Length: 111
Image (cartoon, rainbow, N blue to C red; front, top):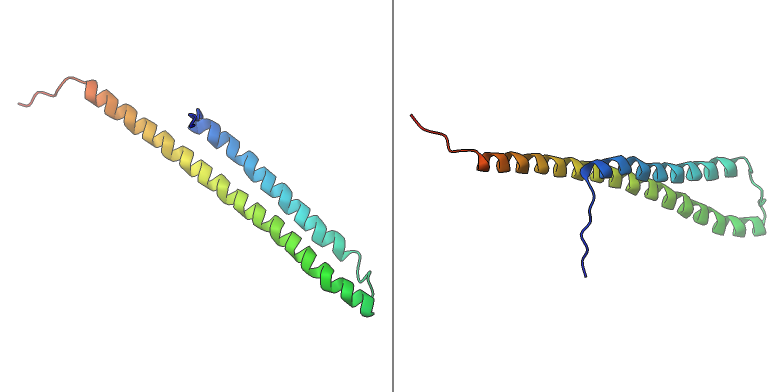
């Protein structure tokens, strides 16, 4: 079952920065993780237990940061795509209006 989506290009353009803002929050979280953990130093130590911990910890933190940064990038790309799509729909609306106006105008008399 399909439903019509009733959204104007202006609404899409207005909403796009809100999507990008969510991505920026994810970037802030990523930065806070990196900066916050940097202040902790070598808290697990350099012994066998510490090495085992770091073997699991570092890949987990790297994956988390990569996920958040990828999310940020994807939402930025989505924002750009939405703005571009809205602009194209606006242009199509303008062209369609011009074509409609031209088709209702009386024919031009040739000399």
